[in-house]
Length: 422
Ligand code: SAJ
Image (cartoon, rainbow, N blue to C red; front, side, top):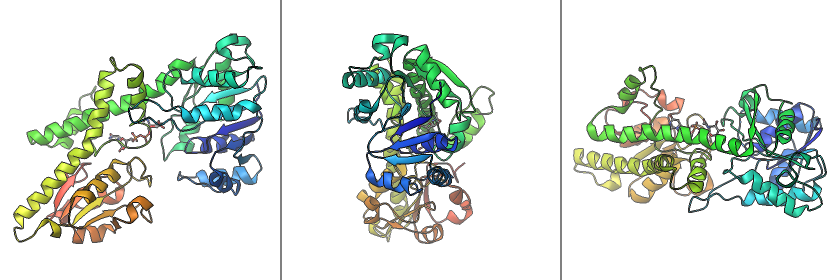
């Protein structure tokens, strides 16, 4: 099987790097996105997201003529769908983007084409995608009806790359490939072998779907364990950072780090896809989500307590005088991504309840996003430390780790990442 023209549908954090890497291997890549601004930016050889080195790879792909973007799907030999799979208010998955992408590509499908779902999806989504395609194209046959003889091959190959290391992990990570039939898996594996240096491991579509959800639920559950420990230790007057360091000296213990909650677009979402399919059985997975989701509220309570303690030590002042500095807004260290960040949510809640001044420090951004800009002031580390009475450390950026705890003697500190408390 040789796929020369590849269409990547959804040019976001996963689709764009994937499209660019295929193009760098001299495949003709047609990127498709519903957002015409995104398409225009990419066609100029620029990028609309932040990811190290991606700008260079996209620029080279576009200028060499191997990558171009469009809003309207065109015929190709293989289609990769990398669109968002958010959840609804009741935590059930929203497959609306997959449905629209399927309907968009259906008219240009032809016999022999391969369609791969890359979006992290609940179990059964690949079969559902194939059913949507079949509805649109009754003239073509699909694996659910014709098995190995089908005109169209369908597979699920979940992305598993870590934001900030996408280009390296895309190439080096092993890839789980779940076809709806063995031939579908083989077809997808041959496509990924174009650039994947890791192993392309073959399974079926449902196992591949569950595998991705399992990886992120495993991490979520382990972070929840650390977060729960941090709240238990606070009550029992034990330093949780020291505790975890000590426990991790056991050869079979490896506890993760507590924080202000779990952010990002994956770990806080994907476990719900398991819970929504098996609500009565997935008790631990649900509880882990609840523990992690409750952590920002706990940090808010700790901040209120710090303000109260400051006022107790300074009885001539009122809450109006107390200056709070929130250190870090990103969803994890040393990145500039503020989306789905518990640090942003906590800062907004502090702003909502605290009558005095609140400032933020985020060394990885130049300006605050619109929804925060009106209410919050972005300041430097030095000015925050000089002016603030209460410091709420929310992200363990390297720039904050460099602040010596010795200069924080007059401040009340809420250290959610153990930067100074450890
Ligand atoms: N976090 C902690 N304590 C820890 C580790 C992480 O509080 O010890 C927090 C982070 O601060 C952050 C959140 O968890 O708020 C998630 O960060 P992360 O670095 O664990 O993961 P993501 O969301 O950047 O990427 C994850 C990865 N999955 C796993 O490591 C199992 C990545 O490989 C996936 O491709 C990605 O989700 C995805 O797209 O699904």
